[in-house]
Length: 197
Image 1: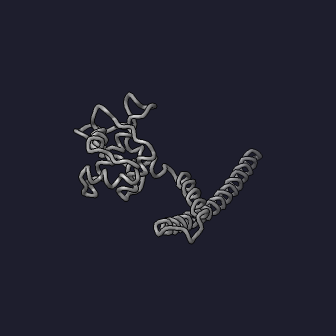
Image 2: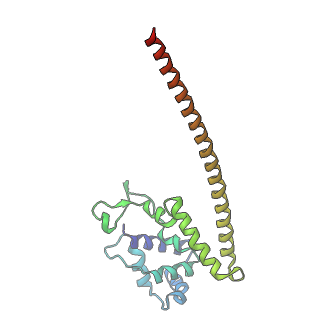
């Protein structure tokens, strides 16, 4: 399954979630696409999931889908079920065209695959929200900003815990090193005494 087929799958899911016919969905998307898709165009886009023709969606369309269906852009990149007819569904990308790569890669790409990426995303978001100013934030942006601040606080608290543990462990390691040196000194002295006898 290509990334465009993933978008097609989620386009169908979004339409079904909203309980719309293809004609109704085309009408809902028209203001955001700048044109109205015909029923045949909509059907062809949705059939891209398993059809021979795979529609190539662009960023403008994905943003229009998010606005028209009132869903986040990330919705359209969420992976479909991992298994189909008893076989794993793989993501087809140029670097893994022959065997495909794990479909779960999409989750990492949507949400970030480690805390470093999350911190980078959080910093970019904070930078953007700061540039808007507090009086211009939507309710959703205020909630996101608040959640980001809470998450940052939790991370700082946890890092403080880690730093405290690291300091304690260094003290224990230094103490053990001192005990080892004392023991080595005692063993050396005992060996000298045995050698003198």
